[in-house]
Length: 137
Image 1 (cartoon, one colour):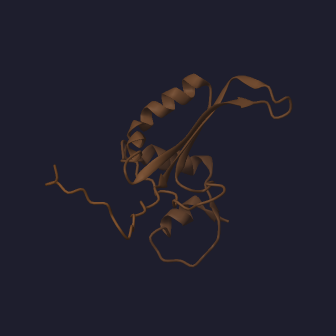
Image 2 (cartoon, one colour):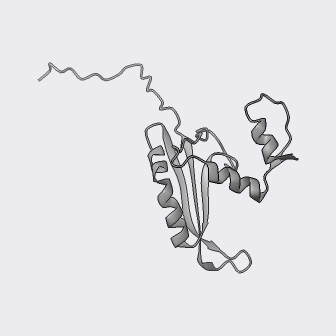
Image 3 (cartoon, helix red, strand yellow):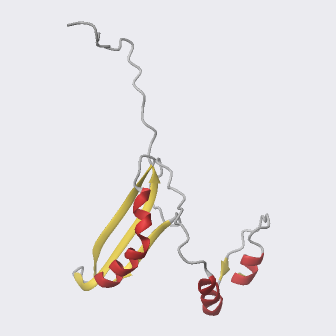
C-alpha cells in the first residue's frame, strides 16, 4: 500500500497503478493544516441515471449529536447552491437507531448530501402542435 506522501508526490503523474494508498495521522494533520481555507466546494455530480449505492461519489457525511451536525453543516452553506436547474441535492438527515435493539439513539444523527445531475428534459415532438392564433378574437 502506498503511503500518503507517495500518493501526493505522484498525484500529477499519469500512472496506471491501481495500488491503494493510506495516510497516517501525522500526514493527515500536516496536509489538513496546510489546506487553503474557504475553497469553493465543487462536487462532481452523480450521473442522473445512476442506480444503487452512491458510496465513493462526491458528497458529505456527518454523524454525531444534532449540535455537532448543525455546527459542521453551517460551514458548508455554499453547498446549498448545488440545488439549481442543472443539479439537485440528494439529502438525508435522520436519527440513528441502535443496530441491535432498533431503538432510536438518544442524541445521535446522520446527515448525507450528494449532488446529482438532473436528467435532460424531454422535448415534445407532437406531429400536430396546437398553436393559438394571436389574431383570432
